[in-house]
Length: 86
Image 1 (tube, rainbow, N blue to C red):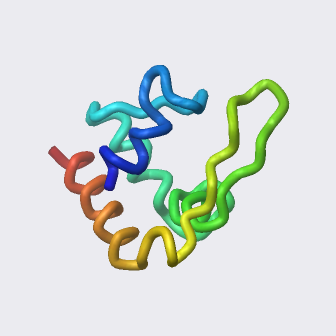
Image 2 (cartoon, helix red, strand yellow):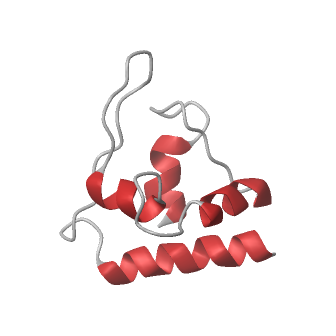
């Protein structure tokens, strides 16, 4: 999921300014961003999406249950936690 979904847009040269990699520092950042259901959490952003901001590339689309199941979201979170702890 991370490689095919997240990295599709968040890679260097992708369609967003928010670049991710497979470096431990990026996984730690994402892990810290998973806590709670706040506006900035991965869970919130993944389910609700984001809006376009002036000067930034396209917004992040929302991943509804039809696009990403709860199990897939939990699997993604487990992968991020695992990679952050290596």
